[in-house]
Image (cartoon, rainbow, N blue to C red):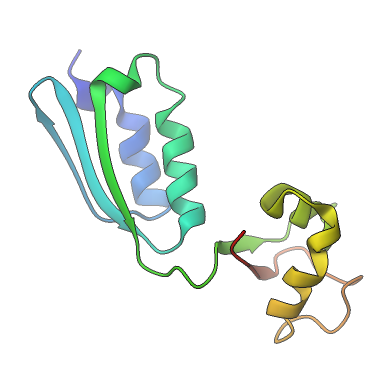
Length: 125
């Protein structure tokens, strides 16, 4: 099986995230991946996917750059979410929810009221 076929899920994810200018090339027995994500969040999602494959360490070389480093990323609010739940997931501390509220005052007026589908900026850790 060719490496690009084995890692087709990465090719698909690169299109979905998106990873801009994504390049996948088999060279020297490795799948070489290059591209750029908008935020670190998308880069982390891409790397998390890479690490789900057996033997990825010896088969994949990835150089993924990030365009915007002013925030970690943008998260779409899902049913059941709260700012503290989002803070716990992304900032590792539920008590940091005011940081998410403060960076999103353009769309939020109350930290206790968020709506499914809202896109919230997530601050850097």
